[in-house]
Length: 269
Image 1 (cartoon, rainbow, N blue to C red):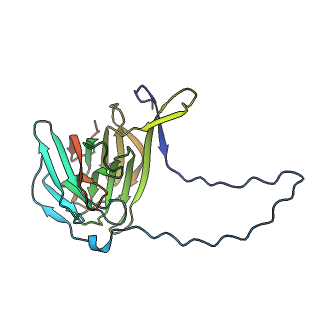
Image 2: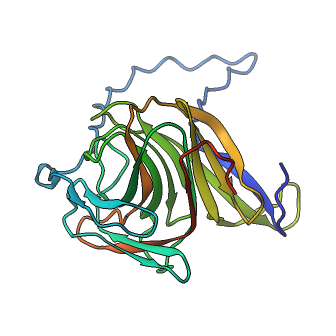
Image 3: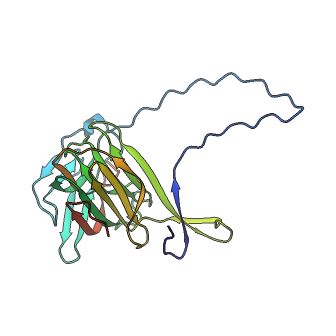
């Protein structure tokens, strides 16, 4: 699909490459095999420190179209939210160590629903110099527990966006990362990478057990990217928007504009 923009855009899916050594040239003796190096210990799964495992703080405080909000995982610093009825913008603030391992910490604005659902929003970060690991999220969650089953699209401060799921309560998240590069210069493809472009709008559509990621990079119509997640949610469950600074002791914020939430698998726009 060709995107309407002045520079060339490339979707880069992160993957590991397997490199093999070339065979020995004819007439040459292959080097003697070396003894295998000692196997490094497997890296430990990174999780929040034990002293961060606080219960979620829930607030029956409606904000805009959302009926409640929570500090998922009991963030060290309280989160917050503001809704401007004139601009229809939500400003969500929070600290939080992360949202990608076996449990999450973030401020979550939510509605409780059943059946099919679709949600979309424009994303921006007021502080352009903020930490690149901060993330604005659209989340479908089974519960408000910190380690709940979930499907999520996250937009990062560095422009990367990610579709992920926690298949079962307490399990490590499984994620697919995407980047859209803007390239400039001569050649095919152009030789100089100028920047990663943050998507302007993202969304999730849940139809039955299938959850599909939709994006608009530079204002073109929303379109699906990648394969759907297959994740069963028992009714009722939660759907909404949230933010995590990715810093345990420092809050930041994201702005969500033109938020569209439908209790159906409606086409996104």
